[in-house]
Image (cartoon, rainbow, N blue to C red; front, side, top):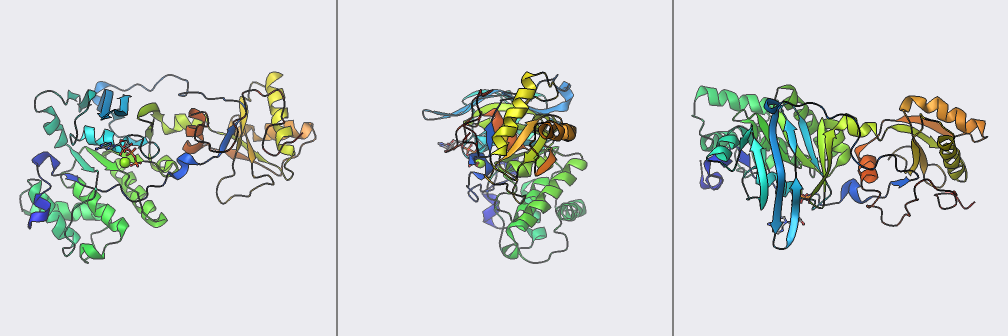
Length: 402
Ligand SMILES: Nc1ncnc2c1ncn2[C@@H]1O[C@H](COP(=O)(O)OP(=O)(O)OP(=O)(O)O)[C@@H](O)[C@H]1O
Ligand SMILES: [Mg+2]
């Protein structure tokens, strides 16, 4: 094996493939205006008791983990908890501190303050961090593979540096991980790989040592939709096979489809963490669209009046943009009634009772993008006005001049 990969040593980094997060630097969904709150029904983490997790369940825990670069505190006292079996998404806009956090967990940079516990051990004590890293596979920046070698040949090189003997068991393991990532039958050299195949070979390399935890920094970054589907399916298979996955992403929609639990960072601070299903429960509702723009604020007024008059199944409403690909009503906005999704008929009846007939009423199962915007009070919005809580008039709302 030639010199290039040798530069990836030391030992604990042998399962750590360096991966670039330079591609796809767009703000994704984070900077987009898509929600106007009429009534803030969620101002923080969802209510309800936290799920119990025993100490043995917790693979990674950070306590007040912080990192300062010069005068800038880019990670600010975050407390993460990744449990065995999680597909855990570390989410946040560009520059929110995701990669910096992962780099601290992987001992690539030192924390300014705070603690990291991996597999129950404080990584600051003794040899704990190195020992823990042997149980982790990771891709944090650009993987270094030889362009003229095949996937299997490249993995043989990685195996050597990972301390795996050049034995039949290693060759079997290489075939196994190539099969896992869907590259076992492709015989071309690395330089002929698509970006998605390169990502998957990186994941295969990180899997060689059969890690209990795999850490992936923006694993779908720069991939086309088909590549994203492949990587998402792969992550699902890893989780089914018992590997805990910690991944970072700024693509909320992506993460929603693959993660079981998420933590949301913004400006280095942890805004919330929890089960995706619990977080999304606060974004579910009934989506209503109208054929005439002026009906939108009228409908909002009817819903808010109903709340004031004791409709306890209704918690609020907000203006949202239609989902990409769906019908855009005149004026461009829809109304999301904050109610259980199965109350769609009640929303319809309520509006119909006041002579307002929606062009479309449907269940909305919620999405992390809306949740994030609710959580931050619409701070991401660039030009739109945030409508105050419980408005007394409806004259400042999208579509309304009344
Ligand atoms: N070595 C460094 N020196 C100085 N500042 C740094 C360094 N590494 C990161 N930063 C800064 O810390 C902040 C957080 O960066 P980080 O790469 O952790 O963000 P991120 O959430 O991973 O963003 P992205 O989605 O763009 O990958 C950024 O403002 C970045 O410029
Ligand atoms: Mg990053």
